[in-house]
Each structure stands twice: as C-alpha cells, then as structure tokens.
Length: 487
Ligand SMILES: Cc1cc2nc3c(=O)[nH]c(=O)nc-3n(C[C@H](O)[C@H](O)[C@H](O)COP(=O)(O)OP(=O)(O)OC[C@H]3O[C@@H](n4cnc5c(N)ncnc54)[C@H](O)[C@@H]3O)c2cc1C
Image (tube, helix red, strand yellow):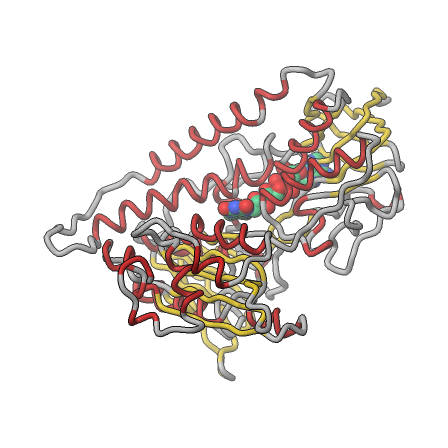
C-alpha cells in the first residue's frame, strides 16, 4: 500500500505531556502540529505514571491511617476494600482527566491532531506512522522527538523466562501495550530502590501485600542525601516492608505459582520468593526503532537524544524534549520538565524569534511515599564535587511545631549552603507535605536566597514550611531552644 503524504509545520513523535505542550504552543503561534502515538493519548504521566500512582497511593494511605491512627482516643479500624473497584475508579479518573486535559484539545485538526500508530523517521523531514488503516507519511518543516522513556530491564539470567511486572501495571484500561494489575498480589518482590519502587512498594504493603524490596545500591534512593535514605528506610521497615540493599541479582526462576530471585548478598547466595515480581530498575529513553539514523540524529551513551540548551539536536530542524533527552542539559525525567521544555522547543522551532535556552538548575522533585521526600538543588556530595565550599545541616522534624501538633514527627530536613556567601544551594526533606514545602526552597534557589532570607521571612504558624526557617537557623543556633514561631 502506498502511504499518504501530509505536510505540517511541526511533526511530533509521541503524545505525552511534552508533545502536548509543544503542540499547544504551535497552535498558539498559528502553526499546524501533528503528534504520532502508538499507545494511549496523553503519554506515561496521565495514563500509567503520575496520576494512577498518586490516586492509589492516597487510597492506600486512607486504609493505612485508619488501621494506625496517630492519636490516643482514636480506635484503629480495619477498613475493608475492593481492589477491583479501586482499579476501576482509577481508570475512570484517568479517563476523565485524559478527556479533559488532552483529547478535548484536539478539536481543531487544522492546528493540532494525533495520528495513532508507531512512528519512525524515514528521512530528516519525513515520519512514517503505521496506523491501523495503513501507513501515513507526515512531512514536517520541523520535527520534535518526544517519545518519552520506558522501563529499563536489567540483564538478570532467567528474567526473560518468567512473567514479571513493570510500572506498566498501572496502565489505563484500553492501552494495547499495558498490563494493568487486576488482582492484588499476596506477596511482591520488587527489584529496584528508586522512587517508583518505593512509591509502589509502600502502596502495595499498605493494602496488605507482603513486600520485599531488593536493590543493589548500598542504600535505597542512591543519589539522594544519605540521611533521607536512612530515615525513609527505617520508616518503611517499621511499616513492615522488607528492604534488602547491596544485593546483586544472580538469577530468576519460576517457583510454583510465583517467582524466586537469587542474589549475592554480602558474599553469600540468598533466595527470595513471592507471588509476583515487579522490575523497577530505572527508565531508559525511547530511542530504539525510531529511525534516528535515517535522519542522522545523534544519541548519547545512555541512549538519550543529544541536544544543546535550545533543545536542538545535531540536525538543525529536529528538536527533542522530555524523558527522551535523559540527563542531557542536566535535565530530569519528570512531567513538568517535559511540559516546560516542550513549549521551549516549539518556540525555538516555529516562532522565528530569538532562541530560548532551558535552565535546569532548579527542578524541585517529590517522591510520593508517606511521608514524602522532596528535593531541590544540590546534595552535599554534589556541592563538594562542584567545588563549592559547602556547609550542611540536618535537623529532625520533631523540632517543627506543626509536626508535633499533628503527632507526625517522622523525617528530617537538610540544607546545603555555599559556605562563604551563605547562599542556599540545596534542600532535601523527608516529612509530611514535603512536596508542597519544597516550592519555597525552589523559589529561594531561583533568586539566590541566603539563610537570612529564610530566617527573616515570616512563615505561617504552625506549618511544615517552618522546617525551612528552622534548618536555616540551625547553622547558628541550637534549634531546641527556640520559642514559638522559630524565634
Ligand atoms: C509509575 C510512574 C510514576 C511517575 N510519577 C511521576 C510524578 O509523580 N511526577 C512526575 O513529574 N513524573 C512522574 N513520572 C514520570 C513521568 O511520567 C514522565 O517524566 C513523563 O510522562 C514524561 O513525559 P514525555 O511526554 O516526555 O514522555 P511520555 O509521557 O512517555 O510520552 C511519550 C509517548 O510517546 C509514545 N511513543 C514512544 N515511541 C513512539 C513511537 N515510535 N511512535 C509513536 N509513539 C511513540 C509513547 O507511547 C508515549 O505515550 C512517573 C513515571 C512512572 C512510570
């Protein structure tokens, strides 16, 4: 069958948050944009990432808190729940969100549309999409690669021969490639110690699944402040998760109805078994089978599309943004980064105005465990590696009045300063509402604030945000000797 040829100002591979931000901006500029998508419109975040996970994590918190009230006088109750109904409401919520935030925007096909099917470059201006009705050839004056990322699967012998789950277990109903988890596993072995492993691990454990998390890292959350990793490990262990660190996966095999994972642990061999195995060992940029070589687009050693700070690839009219650029330009794989950068890429590709550069120095980030982990800027180790004469302090959240008032003092906050100027270069927090609190720190980093700025600013009392003021004070005073409102 010969393919139809169609011309657009911007042809986008993918239809996630990065692609939509770019397509919307193209439409605002009066240009025509088309996206190609082989799974569900809206991409990972809406359909199988952020939204479904946060939806079920909150339900798990309600179940857990009912059984573990923090207040004497509240009686623990075992809250019965239906996994099937929880999954069904999750799908319904996603469907509504997708209809509202993505599909409803596709009402003007002259400016913005999605072509269903797998896309690949056939030349530096042409993208072929294998649609259910046959191939379509989309010709773009400009192209944007926004194909996101996929779970990366480690080479553990036997893994390919056993059934295993990935974060796709949250996939929206109707995703041809998704593997939605329609039954709650009685026991779950999780390979990995990053944010997805921890969020999903705690969620399943709170619903009553027996969870064993096995990671090769010395601690969970490698790359984060060790104080945070250590405190979160204790919290999760107290909730009943089994956490095994420093384990090298040696082999996986089926055992009865379940799976067995053998690891090398402190020099000896050990085997863990469970009903199901979830592989959550990171994500890799989706650059395979895209035909990048046909257009001469370069990738880096991690498989990410190589871009400069304007998000331009080595081919002048081809751009890339979102998860697919990996750590290029110090980017991070997160939805708001892709959405921000998608717009920048569309501006640079189509506006004819001076090029914008991305600035990835301040990217606040949250892990939605309970309590949450939230970070912005540099860790202690990163500051040292960057040659900063840094000064760091970590305090427990028990010194924050709100934490005491609501009987939840779990967690710590750490601040990293540029010693000589006292400018704050990094904050990491584990605690209630850390994902909200971190925005104050992010704004402070953006404007080069010092510890004095945090101390002088009047904070609402009693809030968790006071943790920032108190940790800033801790560089010069004993924070156990403060009166109300951190004075
Ligand atoms: C379990 C989980 C939880 C997460 N939680 C959060 C969170 O709380 N907050 C946060 O900020 N981030 C979170 N993320 C990360 C977030 O989902 C991603 O950073 C974000 O979706 C990246 O957007 P993107 O548009 O770059 O890529 P994607 O959303 O992945 O979109 C790319 C799209 O391109 C399509 N595609 C790929 N190749 C082709 C091809 N050849 N042809 C056609 N289509 C193609 C894919 O099917 C996909 O739909 C989470 C991720 C996971 C997996």
